[in-house]
Amino acid sequence: MIADLVPRLSQPVPRYTSYPTAPHFHDGVTAQTYRTWLGALAPDTLLSLYLHIPFCDRLCWFCACHTRQTLRHAPVARYLKALHREIETVADLTPARKVSAVHLGGGSPTMLEPDEIAALGVLLHTAFSFIPDAEIAVEIDPNDMTAEKAAALAAIGVNRASLGIQDFDADVQQAINRLQSFEQTADTIDSLRQRGIERINVDLLYGLPLQTEASVRRTLEQVLQFRPSRIALFGYAHVPWMKKHQTLLPTDQLPDAMARYRQARMAEQVLLDSGYLRIGIDHFALPEDSLARAAASGQVHRNFQGYTTDGAEALLGFGASAIGRLPQGYVQNDVPTHRYEAAVREGRLATSRGFELSAADRARGYAIESLMCSFRLRYADLKARFGDEGEPIRDTAQRIAQSDEDGLVIADGEGLQLTDTGRVFARVIASKFDSYLGAPGPRHSVAV
Image 1 (cartoon, helix red, strand yellow):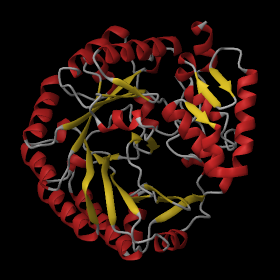
Image 2 (cartoon, one colour; image 1 turned 180 degrees about the vertical axis):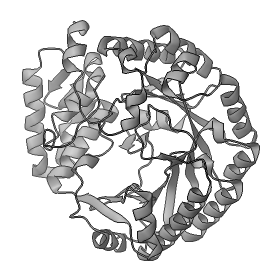
Image 3 (tube, helix red, strand yellow; image 1 turned 90 degrees about the vertical axis):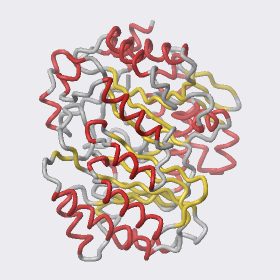
């Protein structure tokens, strides 16, 4: 059965880290819109901050992030001046100050020098007020790391680090232009832990060129020696129409749909046997980690960083291409760094597009997030939150159940739940609630 389902349902659909997804953002949401939304935040609104550093000192050919390679530090230093200015501008425009989470993403935030990390930390703690247990996370490239940088990160309060590994197999690393040894990664993790950064996340990929079940298993066995708090196991997203450098990959050596499926299921079983708990479609966490505890109480959320415990009412995005979410909707900054920097230097917000949410959007977004996070949708919750706006969603759920001939869902009067088989295709099932899917323009990676 699965041999029939995987090729048939491995269709391109969004990853649903937002709803509507970013390709549907438009320029009708402007800098003035964002200014108004910021001003409307109440002083006690809980904030989450995302800071984007769109630079790397090498270009990984598999990467689909907004980043660019630079071998000079001058562009990074110039960009940081703009980032500081934007943080100051936004902080002046909103009464909200209370921060529960910060995420430094990239690119590679560890391209920053220790003094730049320190200055950024001082600015954030001056512009905002951090709650006592705020989570401050950073994405790390072990190739950029030094003991001095680890110390600087610890000094500004970083308490979670996410390391990209992808695969330790030398041939796979060569094929994707991401050379990173086990020893180098181990040294970075040891350096972080020695400085009190105990919460370690690891990002892995399956579906890369030359990957096999055996190579993925070997990488997992090595990663498990680190005993990271969380492991994200993503399927490689091949989107060369968006990221031209992906054409440098040996695409004739990409695993097919069934090979991807077998790699993912094998990896999942290894992680479950090693004591990790499955969170959503692609995350795993140790039972004592906050993400596992949140999953047990139904408090997992999904945003542009993936699965998270972050329940802040507003996410403020800083930096080129950064996306924020406020109660009214989404905003996104200019993607090109030169346009972003020019706007910020002039004291303007760099917002170039976004999306204002309707009541129907919020209800559909809730349904999609529920399926992606807990694999179920409860009608009572839908009704309590959205009233009559939830009725079309309930109708959609019932149609999905009635037309299901593959054993993907279980439905009753209380709601819709995905079966073990259905969880593999959660993105596909969630897409049935997406009223924008199929509109001209956006293309997506395959679902399995």
